[in-house]
Length: 211
Picture 1: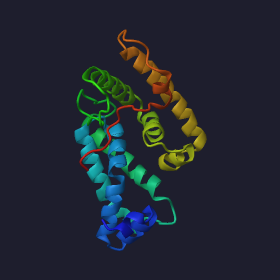
Picture 2: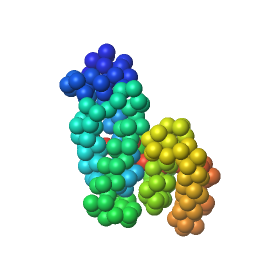
Picture 3: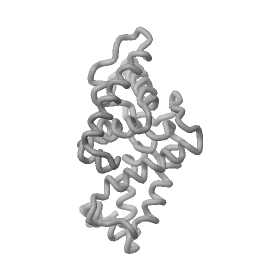
């Protein structure tokens, strides 16, 4: 990817890609592949389907670029496609059933100083992954966009196509359900921290896949 393309905004890259510039499209894929994979993983609950959904996302994006309006933000448009692809793959597999399996999600980079702390961190990530996957799709989407992608309420509203007030109410419900699910999974090992339920930071959502 050229330095010129790296400096371009998404909307400009999308316009160039719509005109046949493959380098511009590759730049968009490189820039967004990890975020797309994480969103697809949150919709499907497992790595294999997330890979398929992420691949399908970029196929659909490429085909839809001629109809994309560069006067509108690219990110929310892309995230809508990614989420719909993830839900479509999930429906084709096993509708409405969380399918997170132990070891299914790629591990984040482990910065723990020792094996015991690393093991504890991996276990905590697994518990949060399972709790996140247990949320209904509408709650899981806003939680991932807020806690993992760090979007504002307004950005989430654009991505999900819902009012900002609905975003806030869904986040509140998602946090309560996450805390309840994490408490149920603690198995007497102590209650989860309030921060885990508040924003699910360090939730163990995969950092990226092979899309």
